[in-house]
Structures are given as structure tokens and as C-alpha cells.
Image (cartoon, rainbow, N blue to C red; front, side, top):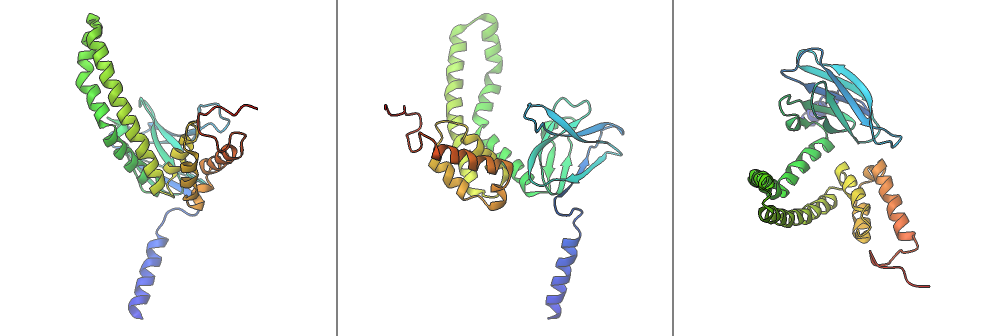
Length: 255
């Protein structure tokens, strides 16, 4: 009984150490090598649908560190824009403690961790790099050859490289699509899964039965996010529309 009490006490201490409460987030960042006073802006997609980004919060780097706190009710993509950096840092803003280690020399190599969806986002991107490696390798290996062919107007070489590239691109595209679907099927609570399915349903030739099956497997918390609700509405519109049940891409029957 004494051992059980000690275990319960230890667990209580561990859970009480969290810096955030329900629907709260804290971004703890390290920005080594970045000057004091440099601005970091937290930005989100404009909810009006105009396509731009709006500023949510602004902080300054102090002794190589920065911190942003706030409230959030569900996961959504945001970016951090570092002053003088040529590209933003994308991440998923959600409740919890998010750690961001800025790589000032290579922004795309910034490390993001600390919450479930951000950990999944990082892992998913690494897995997709493996899937798409063949295409990247071809581009690197043939960039010089293509530039030289363009300068000398050697159409034979240009056409050959383009044909090879297109073939690899189609292969990678097929493998990427399979990876997306497999991920969404096997990660029923990941925000990435909802984004994948939402994108899948934007394709008129999408397999609606497969999409519906994946959606039905989602956890309720994911279904209640904005992408989750949009997926539900999209599935409802397709399955109850005038062409419901028709083969994708098929012409409507003549009256």
C-alpha cells in the first residue's frame, strides 16, 4: 500500500509540472546566434479566406531565447517569421508545450517538438523525404547537364532528361499518394490525417468509399476540428448529391 501511495504521489507531481492549462500553449524557442532584439512574429492564415497571413503575436529574441504564450482551442497550421530570414518556420499550433530550436543558417532544418501533432508532422516529413528522394537525387545529378543543354539548345538532351524526370515524377507521385492514404488510415488522431483526407476529397476522382472509411475511423477530437468538419460536409455533399453512387468521372445518365 505504501508503494502504491508513493507511485500515485509521484504521478501527481509529474502531471502538476505542466506549464500550460487546458486550451493553452507555450512556445519555448532557442535562437542561438541570433542578435538580441531581433523580432519573431507568430502568424496564422487569414480567417477571411483572402489567402494572406495575419500577425497573432510578436516577441523579441533575448539571450538566444524567446517565448510565446496564448490560448488555442484546436490544432491549426501557423508559422514563425524571424526578422531577416528568407522563409518562415511552419508548425502546428496546439495546446501544450511546443519547443522550437531555430537554425539561423538553415531555416528548413529548424527542430520542432513537444506536442503530439508537431512530433507527427516532423516524422511525416522525414518519411516523405524518403519517398521523394529518387526525384530529388535525379534533379541534383542532372541540374548541370540540363543547364548546359539549355545554353547550347541541345533539344535531344533536354527532351531525354525531361522524359526521365516525368517518369520518376509519376512514380514518386503514385508512391506519395499511397503513403498519404496509409498514414491517414493508421493515424486516427493526427491533424495531418485530416489535412490529407481533406486534400484527397478535393480531387473529383477520389475514392469516396475509401475516404468515408478513413473518416469514420478518426477519433472524435479530430472529427471536431475545422478540417474534420469540412471533411464531413464534403462527404455528405458527395454522397447525397445528384451523382451519388456514380462512378467517378462518369457522365450523368441521359434523361
